[in-house]
Picture 1 (spheres, rainbow, N blue to C red):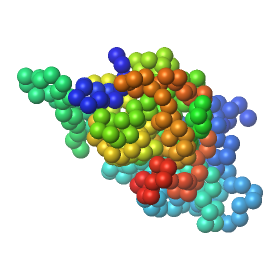
Picture 2 (cartoon, helix red, strand yellow):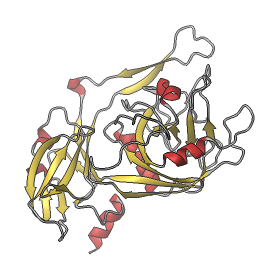
Picture 3 (cartoon, rainbow, N blue to C red):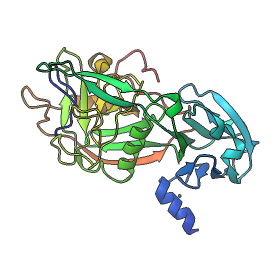
Length: 345
């Protein structure tokens, strides 16, 4: 089934042990706080290793930071070597409504290295499409969410990993992507996993939709090794309830008519005006923090008449993980060239 976005009036879409840990979590030679493993069951120890660069002077601490606001939720002093985050921050396991946070090393007053993402493994709401009866032609249905009652919510532990950005090298330039696990943790993790594994290597950008049908720039789409718009990674991921508005430089997951059919295909938005209607039904999970000119170049590639199919499709040559900046200290989301106002995080 072809994975795509809705068209107007049409139904949609880091000795040996250290090396093993490195392979599991991705290269993090510059990571200053490193989890011993990826998953930690609830009420267990959360062992990590702290590395303090010799050049950095001052007392060291780990700060727990709130996503987007960068608010310091808690601070604990540390020294180089092994630490147990569950001892440093007991609320990791006692918080009644656990939320994703970033564990950032600070030396003196300076944040050092990429943060560690602490993602709670909790029960998630499920999406479904409701249609009117009798169903009418071209009825796209209404997306509704089955929220999990408080009494049924399960907190199993945390997924902990060093924060990374993804750099995509295309035939028309590079794009750097900051993942947003705070809004869509499982989608962001799946995308990172695919990029780290080499999935996005020599893949066509198979769709360039310059117009949303109402004169506004729409999306560029890729992620199918076949280049047809019908292929994927051999698995699907559930739709997540993201609240990140679609706008220029925002990355979102493509899907078919059914909500839980995302996989590897993604799209990069070209304008707020053209993509605002995707808020909710589609899962935005990342933002481009460099490469606005590349996005604009890709958006102007010639397409076949009355089609979103490129005449000569540009390609993603490779995608790789790179250390993210200290949390809250990196670049903001790209803005459309010549745009006056930046996209809000």
